[in-house]
Image (cartoon, rainbow, N blue to C red; front, side):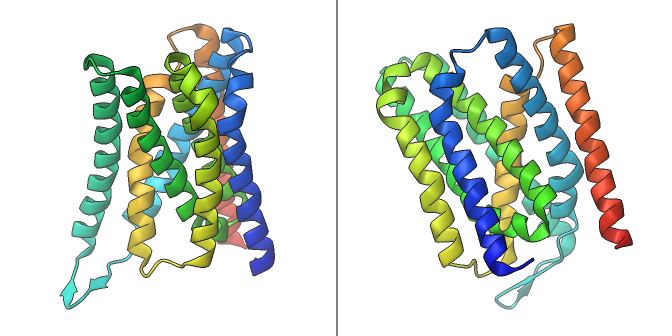
Length: 246
């Protein structure tokens, strides 16, 4: 893929995700039933992408040397899944603490703000590496993070509408664009940095999917959820067949 075309794709996808932060205000006005269908579809894509592409890619990552210490493949794999677990735990603790602790609404908002900014920045940081794999995986990755951002922002908007309208959507919008500029300007020193970022993101995405995006036990949402899983799975397998055949 031509480097100019590649960077253009990175910028286009980053702008798309940054606009999700701005669109939540408008999307929150649509019928609740349709919002649940959207989150069910996003949840199906997210779960499938993480389990069928992201995790296998991390598990097959080659061992690397850090200084004079040779790190074996088994330890690398465990450390990746530890980073994923950390991403899951941090989101769980943030949500649980914000819900249980009697803290001011503005502080509650800032806690979620910090987490969501981190997710948006990590997306921007890792996006150029994903685009190198091809347009299909780049789109899947962006849709996965878009579902994650939409779901997280919707929760913040629901409980902190005033703060979201005045501050957060613009901060989230800017974070993605700043992150992609940094990612294109400063290349990581090691592929491990990218892999750990992927792992951390996957943990947060999975927990968010389980908490917010999975169907609420209704036949309609289950149908959309399973349909998106089947279509995404078929697409990933087809992409793999094409990749290895050509």
